[in-house]
Image (tube, rainbow, N blue to C red; front, side, top):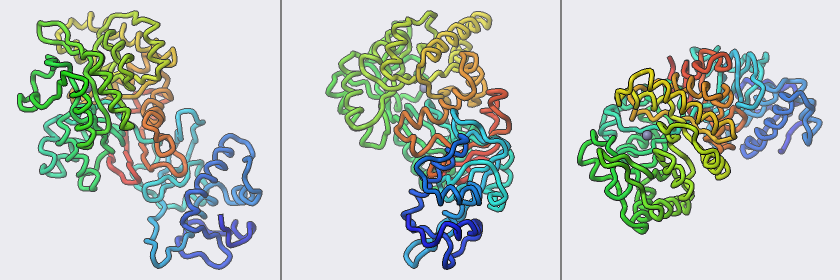
Length: 482
Ligand SMILES: [Zn+2]
């Protein structure tokens, strides 16, 4: 860092006023900002832990003590002078909360503030006199419980709201995304099988800023066993069904994966076991599954699998898939402990989709009392996977399931034994780590993407509050406000 003043002078800098630095005030070169943010992150973390920071200059400690964390942080941000060639920096904005969970494993902050600049978080910590002078990002969003933006790791962008995404009115598409995702706090969503080109067109319109929405990732067109489309897709249009790949050899599976990723997909989805109407189950041959997974991994992407049953879990392990799109829902317990241990050891993540089971049982007209026993049993079995250290990514299987409200899913996860902070991790830090983006998102810390959710209640009191969303912010932009 190139300081242009002495430590004692720095304390007096007014952090709020955005004007060029006066002689003797703090000034950072642009390139210093990110390093400074990291530096502050260390100091902030130390303050939160109640410890004196290690490895930081004494001048910094003096400055933080005198000006408060936010005075210090904001002095970094407000005084960088735009030169003739650099565009002016966006202003700092604040989101104030009665409580802030910076991450699932950090002590929550009462009466805190998250300070944003552009698409990034500048600081998160207790409010003080200086941070109170930063204008609100959106006043109607202040006063809630603030957490990092959520990821839904199992959705399908297949509803009529997204039809003809290339040409449909932006407002209609945006409404569809609000109903499905943004009103529930999702700032990232993984579509794991849809009409790929339509989904890519939708993503393009979101990325252009024409449609406000979450970051959209997609597995594009999924792979099925040879002649093995599942009976539950019968309702889709014949022209769409005809486009679904059912490769018959390992070589054609590799070619299908390449084509899908080249077209813009971010992952591969394998239907390993598919029910056939009145004709039992079809299995994807192991060499085809392994080839598709290997080709995907060679491109640095992840593989989702739809397992259906215990054989599907074994097939997923053999093919080295990364994420199970469901547990083996409907399979009576006990699920073999050794199999669960192998999944855990292989680092395979599981998306619970527990509410889906109740939905499917109702569709099959299973009597309510019997259905409830099956749900109870599977919730218990999923809980064994979690208790043994299995990794979980939150996901709901909307828009396959028309009811988009995740409240029941949160309740079922809690019933499986997951605490509120474990559920928060499945929504935030776990997907960030799974996609190797833990330094970019998943927590509220300096330098992170300004993706955040404001809840109207504390999830520590009831996990139902995870669905009680007041505002959703993606990249510093309010994409939903109640
Ligand atoms: Zn699904």
